[in-house]
Each structure stands twice: as structure tokens, then as C-alpha cells.
Length: 167
Picture 1 (tube, rainbow, N blue to C red):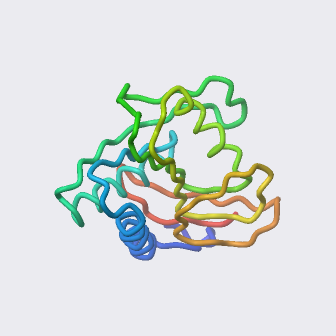
Picture 2: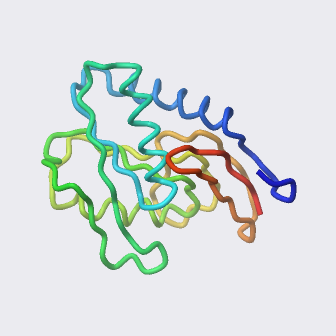
């Protein structure tokens, strides 16, 4: 981590926020035996993998699947989800690193419309207050009011969330 970045989350704090969200997921889905954690390409995939691992640690009787949602965030015409799982009657949690306008989360739901999930929930490590679309995360690690010109980046190293900074 470099000094010229304005960090809003460091690794240890980010992990604590994700642990809290994992507990919330278990609480809000009590009685479910299977969850699909679907990360949006980039930082969302790393946050999803961490959430998957935390949920597994908290409840090893829960069947968990990890999926990946691929889309171009600027031009989200084609949205793909892999692997091809049976998403019918399942709880699916769509994960991104930062939620800004709700646009990416909205488009990430597109491939799930071909199925009939029991429930779709959304999660973001950092949530901002610039909603232009009617989708906002059900689970948010940290809420932050920013200007439209500000950008938040989640920093990852391999499969580890190292922090988040404002620029």
C-alpha cells in the first residue's frame, strides 16, 4: 500500500466487514441448504471467493457453489455466467467490489433471468449513494457518500482483498 492513496479500508478491516456480511447472509438465509455465490469479473470475483470461504468456515453443512459473471461494465450487452449450474429454486448472491449507480448489478442479473431462482440477493464491499438504477446491495461492507467525480478502487493481491481507496 502506498502513501499517496487515501485508504478507506485496510486488509484487516475489509476482512472484518466481509465476516459480518457472511454472518448476515447466514442469518437472512436460515434454513437454506444451498447457496450460489456469483462474483462479477474483477474485484467482485475476489470478494465472492472470500465470501464463499468465510461462509464455508461458518457453516460446513451448507452446500456452496462459486460462479463468475462476465460482462463489459461500460457496454454490458453480453453477460455470461459460468459454470452452467442449475440456478432454479436456489439462492443466488451476486457480488461486486463497489456498487455505484446499480447499473453493473442490474446487468449482472441478466443471465439469471433464464432461470427461476428462489431468491437473488446482492452484495458489495463498498456501497456509494449514486443510484441511477433500482438495484442496491442487500449486503454492504461499508457505505460511503462521495461525489460523482470520486472513484473507489478495491485493491487485491491474488485472491486477497488488500483494501479499498478513494481517488
